[in-house]
Figure: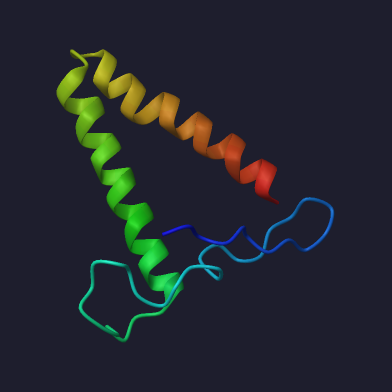
Length: 84
């Protein structure tokens, strides 16, 4: 299934994330009652959790702690600054 491109608000800004997604995911048997935005938030949370597990599992200490906190926090702060 090809998803449509996100809506733009001009000057390169995009509409609220998840607004362009279908109301239910392709593997669901029918309408689940959740909004596309709720699905998107759930997907992002799962992705974040999987990334954290990979960092903790695949990197030896103390690299995992540094990457999982210090590097992650600095990237997160930069992304938040760019989104404002």
